[in-house]
Amino acid sequence: MHVKLAATGLLCAASLAAQMTSFPKPDYFREAFTKPHTRVQLEVPVRLGDFVANDKMELSLRSFLELVMANNTEIALSRLVIETAQNAITRAYAPFDPVALASFRNQRSRTPANDVLAGATTLSTLNQPLNLSYQQLLQNGTNYTVSFFGTKNATNSGFQNFNPAINTNLSVNFAQPLLRNRGTYVNRLPLMIARSRLRVNEYTLRDNLLRILSEAELTYWALVEARENLAVAESGLNLAGQSLQRSERELELGAISELDIFQPQAVYAAAKIQVAQATYFLRQREDALRRQMGADLDPDFRKMPIVLTESVLPPTDAPTTDPEMAVEAALALRPDLKAAIQTLDVDDLQIKTAANQLKPDLSITGSYTAQGRGGIFNQRTNVFDQTGSASTIVNTIPGGLGDAFDQLFGFGFPVYSFGLQLRLPIRDRAASAAMADAVVNKRRDALQVRNLTQGVRLEVLTAVNQVESSKASVELAVVARDLAQKRLDAEQKKYELGTSQIFFVLQAQNDLINSQSALVRESVGYRRNQLNLLRRTGELLEERGVIVQ
Image (cartoon, rainbow, N blue to C red):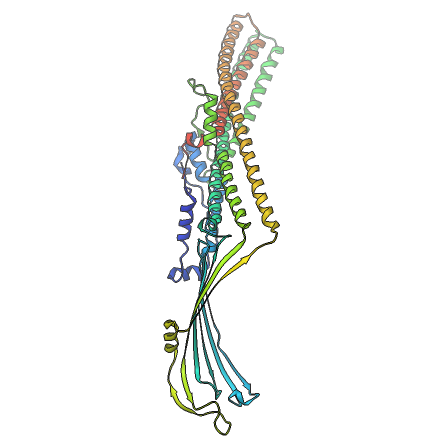
């Protein structure tokens, strides 16, 4: 039996990130613009037909647990916790995702001139700015932005030298934290917390599997007990029927009076009631078993008879359990204890996150900008001619976007700057409170680990004592059943010889039925206590062949 889960949070995040195509690959547009598939389709139960023979489901304990692992709805719900934790890892990468921005605007305007310097009676302008930028936060804390700005301006003004004028601007800006959020380790703390929480959820899933499989196996043994109790009730009905037939024959022969026939009839009626009750109880247990393995979801298996192949009697050579070794195994294997210990790792990471927020926010900033200009150059004599009118164009030099880019990447017109930026809270009570809460949470979780460790030890020791007590109870129940059988045989012989009464025979039959029921109860109780011990030590999954990957 296998439950496929990710071994580490890193592999989970890598597998999920691989599904997210980056720009500008063709899959990016398909994923971005295609309607996501949100339809939820539940799978039908599987492998139920593998265990059908002669129109009956024959189930050993191992085969039943295989069906539980494949079809149990609660197990499917538990697995979703892992997927949510994997999504949290993907979300922790989000601050480092790059972002590209683009904008373009086309604006034309016509305005009346207010003075002669406008260059035209009615000023007409065309403005077309383009803005492109790319920004990203690196894992070491550096935040950089690369942006390009270009604009084209055209006008009918008589004073415009470049018309249309094309201006380009390429700038690089960065900010590097020097105290708060400095370094790869600090900026990856949310990612490490998400991975640690994934491990907590993996341990929680194993603990849920322990609980669900334990409940399923208890349901299996409950059905075995109901089956054996029905067999015991039918055996009692058979004995009561034989006694009633013998008494009726004796009444016909005149060996007994009519008053002596009432007790065998009453015993037979009571035995029939026991059989009827055991039969209905068996049906209830079968319905519960079908639900555990998903057979109730398939109409073909809802009413199919179930045959359990496990014997109710426990093995006679079961070794004695060493309590201290069982405790050591539980401390090493219990997934709930591992989850609690893993929570301490989350607390340590959160303390480091809170300590980072207590530091002053000091950053070094820098920028570099290159500029370019191009367009058609109108060479003029002067701003005004001798009459005060706008100067005339004496020469036109063609140009365009290429000139603007030549100047831009020639880096002949640079603008650069460096600086320091300090944000110093005079008193940061929120950060102080967050740090105090983080320490309190770690202390609380440490106490919970110690409390859980104590509880694990007590649970294991109690489970060991219950197993040993059940083992002794089964042995005594076997002796009691054998003695009850010998007593019944003796009473029947004495009754046949005429030295005993039918009352004592019926009483011996009742004692035998009770001893058989007690043996079934103690045997199933031993199985349950043994199952409880495996769950308390955390060995149930390995003992039942369940592999969690």
